[in-house]
Structure formats: C-alpha cells, structure tokens
Length: 591
Image (cartoon, rainbow, N blue to C red; front, top):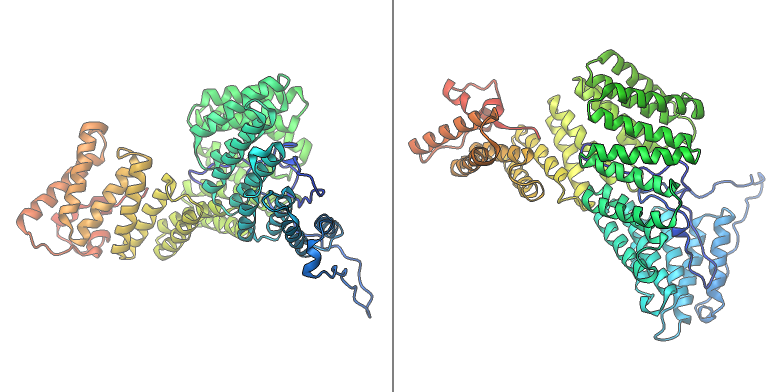
C-alpha cells in the first residue's frame, strides 16, 4: 500500500507453534533462530481423526477430575503442563490444552512460596497466552502476558531476566498480531533493555533482538531508528560471525531496505551487492535471485532501466528453474517487469506481464500464502490505476481485501487497501463508497496506533474530499483540521501534502461563509511560498487570485451569505463568470 513498508518473513521460516516447556525450565528458543516480527499465520489445530464406526462415536479423552484442594499439590502444575503438551501433540486441539494450562497456572500460583516470585508460574502463563493466540483470542492473551512479565524479578539473576525478556517479546508479538505496532515496539524495547543488562551489549543474541526490533521499526516507517539498530546488529555480527556469513547477509538486506526507503539508493546497492556475495558463498541461489529483484527495484528507482531488466531477468530464470513457472516468486518478478515497462511507455508489454502474474495468482500452487497473492494484486492494481483503468484496479483491490479480511495482524495492510479503494471510488464518482472505504481505513489506523503518521493525515484529507462531494461540509472541516494538525507536526508546514490540506481547508471555510478564516489560511500559504518555497509553482498565481477575490468580497459585503456548496464543487452549476474564477479546479486538491 502507498506509504507503507513491510519486511516479509522468508518463505522457509518455521511457523508459529505452541511450545510447552518442560516444568522448571524457561526456554531460550527465541534466540535459537531469528524470526521476523511480521505477524505470521498461526496454524489451525490438527483435524485428523480416525473415522468412527457408524454405530459408535469416538469418545474424547477424559479430563482429569480435580477438585480445588488438589491444586495445592506442588507436583500437579508440572503434570498439567505435560498433559497440555500431550493434548496438543495428540491432536485433541488447543481448547483442552488451554484448560490444563489454566489449571497448571493456578496450581503454580497456590504453591508459590509467599513473597517469592515463581518462574514456573510465569512459564505457565506464557503457555496460556500462546494457546490463546493459537485460537485467535489475542485480546485475552494480553492481560495474561502483562501478568506474566510482572512475576520475575530481573535483579535475581539470569533466569528471571530471561523470563521477563521472553514475556515482553511475546507480548510485543501479540500486539503486532492485533496491528498495534507502536505498543509492540515498546514491548520489544523493554525486552532488549533487559537482555542487554543480562548478557551485555555485544552478545550475538542481542544482535538478533536488535534486528527483530529494527524490522518492527521499518514496519512503523521509523527508518532512522531502524538504521541505528541495524548498524548495531552488523557490528555485533562482525565480531561473532565469519565474514560473508548468512547473518551478515540478512542484516545487509534489511539495511538496504532502510536506505532505499530513505532515498539513499547508492548505499542500498552497496549493501545488496555484499549480501549477494555472502549468499553466493553459501550456495543460496534462490536468495541470490531475491536480492537480484531488490537490485532491480533500485535500478528502476534510479531510471537505469536496462540494468533493472537484466537484474529482473536473472532472478526470473533462477525462480523458474528452481520453483517452477507458476510459483508466486515468478509472479512477483512479472509484476516488477510490468511496472518497469509501464514507466518506459511500453504499455503492451506491461499489460502482458500483468496478465501473466494474474494467471499465476488465479491458480496458486500449494504453499502460496494469501498475503503473497494480495500483495501482488495490490501492486498490479496500482499499474491499472496509472493507465487510467480504475474499475479494473478496484476489482483487484476488492479481491486482495477479501483475501486478508480474516487474517490476524493485517489491520494496517487492510487499511492501506481500503484507502486505495477510496481513491478509486472517488475517481469514478462513487463518493459514498469512497467515504465508507476511507472511514473504515481511518478506524483501523486509529486502532493500530498510527493516528500520528503522515499516511493517516493523507487519508483524513482524502476522506474530507469525499465528504465535500457528499455535501457533508461540517464533517469535511473536522477531517481537514485534524489532517492539518498531523501533517504540520509530522511533515512540516512546507510539505506538499500539508499545503494541499491548507488549500482544501480554505476552500471549505469559504463554502461555510467563514471568509476570515479562509483569508487567514491563504495569506499563510502565500507567505510560505514567497519566503520559503518560491513563487514558480503554478498554484501560486491561482492562490493569489483566490485571496484577492476573498478580500474584495469581504470588504464589499461583511454580512456575506455562505456560498452554496453546490456552486463551489459542481463545475456545471449556474454561476456568474466572475464567481467561476475564484476556485478554479474545484478549489480542492486530492492528496
């Protein structure tokens, strides 16, 4: 989606599973293998069952019959955790396991020595939260984890520190699954602080956590913070890993993504070349091809089209030979080539590659994720939008939305798709649908903690424009004013998006009869252009004429009636010639 960046989990990463540690131990599995903070699809519980005979149903395993007094037995907690693990392994499903794990946590709590923190209790709460997450009950997992991180006392030693670290990281993952990126980052940061205190700043496990947090920062578009963390990760791995290691390659790919997002394309290319060399040394041909795609993307951004085509074709050859012609990685390269040929004016070739990619997405091979298909369709929709085929773009966005609507952790991505759909609806004149799409996107962005991001400000501006077209002028003013506050703080008053909101707000104030407020805004915009932005912008003369008209009208008729909104936004309205000049181009700017 526009303005949003995500780091994809490698396709061969192990899926999230419910891990029930042995009693009396705290797992260090988080640092045994690095995984992306990108939300992952939790596996559904096994449904494999032996077929019952026609005249007799298979009885479920009996639950242990326990009364409350038995919870005081110190051997019961470990036993119940073992039963929970066995319930999951045998295919009985997480509901039974949840029942056992909850009783185990109660037993550990009752058996804990007074005034002494129980690591067994913390461990059992982690298990309970993991089972809640496997059931999709993320909101219920959060208070359990918040209770778990309050149990250990870090000053008591490494075991307590590890338990607290694991709790914070698991809580961060859960917030991430709910789309609450800012809260997840706060948890990851707390976990990193504890880990550094326990292990020191140069421990390789600290490096893995730094990269984990850096990826989360990238998702939140906090690129400066992500770059700092990624540099620290590279420094740690340079000490503990061999030159051209796989760890270094992963760090450099992430650093390249950050540099590309910041517009530092030369540095991004340098990191990608070094990462590619490391992958070649380790015989990772498919990863080399994936890096070639990233290299092609940077060449495309630099308008070095021949080099971009060469990189894409290299990757395409490898993907076809190793994964087959219908693999989603092949489709992703088709999409990049389609974008390249569109930008070079070769629309026939662009359309052909779009169709080839869509054929693959229409009949995905086993193992293809909904996120991969939805991402590809969203990119293709952007190409259709650019070649003025908004209806086709809308169809693809609607398909992408349907694929993701029941996936946890995809709220921000869904909000981006809904915002794109709102723009498409607006362009084809379906203003009611546009407002509904923007409204849904705004609600999701508010819930996920992105209400202060520039993207959120732009979406508010777009929703305001839709409200203007629906004559909901009061609602439009509220949206423009909120967008102005966000964009002024996040982008500054001189940013083009902020200027666009100023202009829209002035036009809306004029429609309401608030001439003095409109004059004040236009005077401020003209001052910005004259003193900082320059007067060569074609909008300068138009804004100057608008201000002149408003000043004349304010001087002639102080009790001026509010301008009809119909006259303001309808180009076919019956106005005098003089009135038509004031708000040329409808007076509003689409951000």
